[in-house]
Image (tube, rainbow, N blue to C red):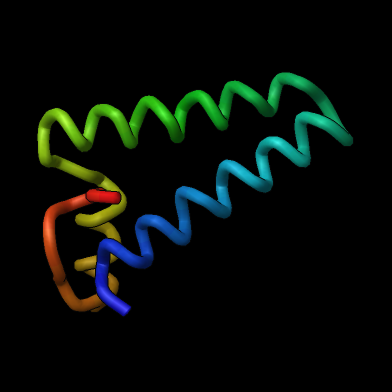
Length: 69
């Protein structure tokens, strides 16, 4: 898997987990869902993605544009 695949996997997982936490624990977890969405939008406009930088430092191979879906 390359960086883009990991980013999609992580973002999707964060969204699913935060929606489940909002439903079963506390609705304030939806702010985390909002945070993930805003970061995805920001990365599509600026072509800069913090998660990409973190994954590259962890040794994940690069591939394609950052945070592209």
